[in-house]
Image 1: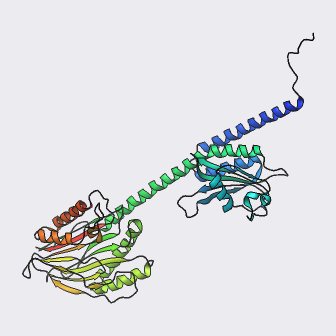
Image 2 (image 1 turned 120 degrees about the vertical axis):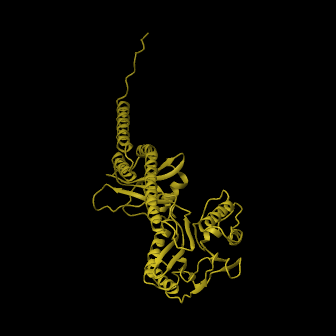
Image 3 (image 1 turned 90 degrees about the horizontal axis):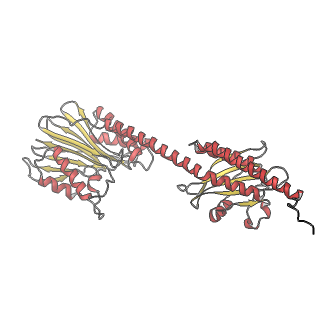
Length: 437
């Protein structure tokens, strides 16, 4: 009986294949380890994607690479945010076409094409004549497609293999979360920067508003503006004039936030300039309207109430350029308790280049009160969607005919907030109250 041998010799071919497989595994681990170290410490998404593409091209021996990221805020569902080419100068940068993007969006799995023109999955697609082969892998986070990593044209005479596909898929899986984290970090930093800019803008805007109310014997005057956002589009101003006069205004710029605040500052400078030239209310509105029309986009406009208080002769000359009609409560020698509306003037500022504004005078007796307000006071919504309305101002005026100017503003603001309840403020609230003692 012949004894059985302890071991069987391994065929030379099988041993060689095993050695190739091990060398390939070591190379892949080295590639992935180097990539992890290269991108792990960076917060710059462009730098990270650039590194991923270059390492991917070397890993699968391709000519070009591109990362296409999902941009959920854009009209197009996919947007190329970075493209890196590693090839000779005669090769033009390639774009991932919409057919491939759509396929990847639906299937969310690797796609290997070594003969694009003959691929049945993309019949009718016009390929760039320089594309001989391509390999796409999805960038996924919790099964959600965040982007696509694509490499083009295997170098030499070979084609992309299943091994290339597997390695590129591993690279994509390792990179997806790092890319997304970098993008979120950059968005957070941009938000912090924007908030700081808004804080600075608020400081500038607050600096443009009157620091205190005018102190005029025989008159009680107050103003207040409460923006709906960090910075707003409402403003009010008191501008001292010579010969016993005080100009004042209250404006409401279209929109809210930073654009409205910038336009507000522009309008304020214009009004002050016209006032210093001793223009009448209608002249001031006419010139300001033309300047605003010529210097802003068509969709930008402003409403404005502008008045000149003659506190020696106790009368108010005003022009209302499309603004909310102020209330005037007469409590003096004339009809006591009568409410009037100040509506003489013309259209809003900035819609047409020229407009013939009008002005008028109203006398001010002892006890008379003028309340100028923005639409944030009347259009404040309740929890059920009902507006606060103008009747609320009329009621508070009738109930508090002897209230001080600042006290009346306090009551109006409190009434608006009570009406809104838990609903957040959606428009700027601005008030100016003038009361003859």
